[in-house]
Image (cartoon, rainbow, N blue to C red; front, side):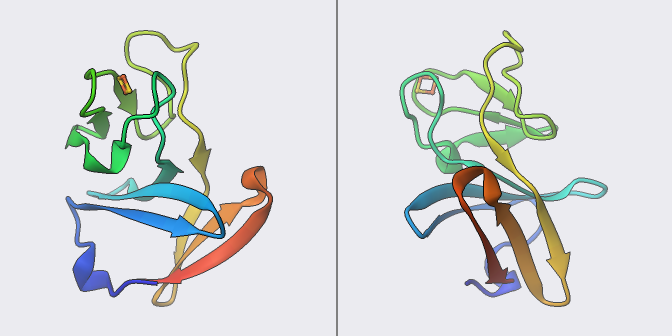
Length: 108
Ligand code: FES
C-alpha cells in the first residue's frame, strides 16, 4: 500500500483499509512495525498524528499515552487501544485484521 521509504524507522502513517482506520508505526528494533486502531479510546483522537517516544504514543488531543508494544494506556492499563498483529513478509507488511473481521497485506 505504501513504499517502505515512506515509512522509515521512527515514522508513522495513517492507513484506511476496508473501512478500518489504522495508525502504523515503524519503531526501532526489536519492535518493528506496530499497527493499532487509529481512534484514541478516550474521544477518538487521531493517534497516527501522535508524538512517539520510547514506543509510547501520545494522543494529540488530550495527551493520553499508549504503550505501542501492548496497547495499554500508560496511566490506566484498563484502557487499551486495539492492536493488530503486523509482520513484514518479503517487501510487504501484513496486518491481521481478524479482530476487525479481515486480513490484508500492504506493500512496504
Ligand atoms: S482523544 Fe485521545 S486523549 Fe482525548
